[in-house]
Amino acid sequence: MESFNTEPQQPERALSLVDSTSIIVGIIIGSTIYESSPDIATGCARFADEWSRRLGWSEYAETLEVATILSVWIVGGIIALVGAMCYAELATAYPRAGGTYVYLSEAFGRDVGFAFAWTEFWIVRPGNVGAIAFVMASYAGEIIWPLGGATQWQKAILASGAVLLLGIINALGLRAGTRTQNWLTAAKLIGLAAIVITAFTIPRSTQPQPIVADAWENIMLSLILVMFAYGGWADMSFVAAEIKHPEKNISRGLLTGTLAVLVIYLAANAAFLWVFGVGG
View 1 (cartoon, rainbow, N blue to C red):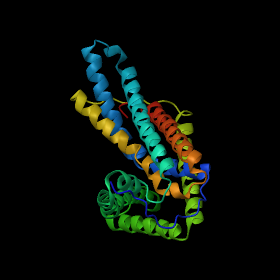
View 2 (cartoon, helix red, strand yellow):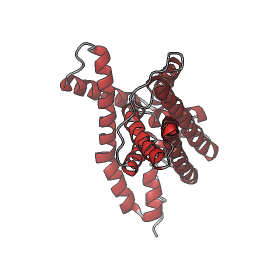
View 3 (cartoon, one colour):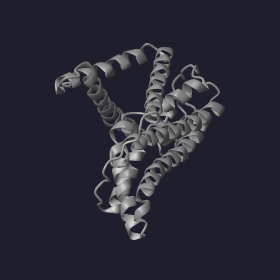
View 4 (cartoon, rainbow, N blue to C red):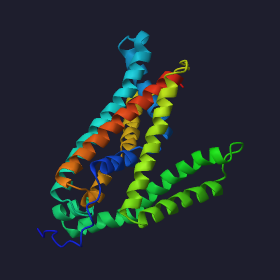
């Protein structure tokens, strides 16, 4: 099989362990923790309700609901961690610019690598960025226009402006992009920490329990949504060529970042459950 040995000039290795960890945390933590947590909780609660009835444990239904919700987030984190470790091995073996494109080209040839890169460039990345930008615009619209919220055109302008601004910042160079990424990641962590602290310092609420539906369909949907929440750890490979001491820092960054996200997601969901209850 033809080896993928022809490489362009590699970029400067300027990213530290803190930078690479910040990239992982910043990429993984996105809109899903806010947008999909209710759907994940609903699916898990319905699954737990159904099995508590079948097993005759109805008096423990709420405990099972909470345990199921947190367990699904843990399972998702473990799966993401296993994937991250696989990518750490690949990125350490091939610490070159291109990430998944490089690995697929090495394993299956350039045609497969090209097909992946073409799909990423024209479909996957624009769709991902666009979806996240619109979620950001929806939340920003509630702050800018608190009385009526933003119109669809206003959301489109906000989303496009955010994408354009971040694109310009990254075009200015690695250091500008790294600083921005670190500050944005810090802002995410401070915001989530504020939610958790606030949640556990106010009285707990109770809400009616969700309606019971097909148990397995609900738990499978919850797992799909959870994996979307953990998506992004593989993107570390795209900056593997820019990380200092890649033989150590790639695996450390992936491991530390993914574990940090797992802990953050558990804390956030525990806070949501404490304040709103399972039904809320």
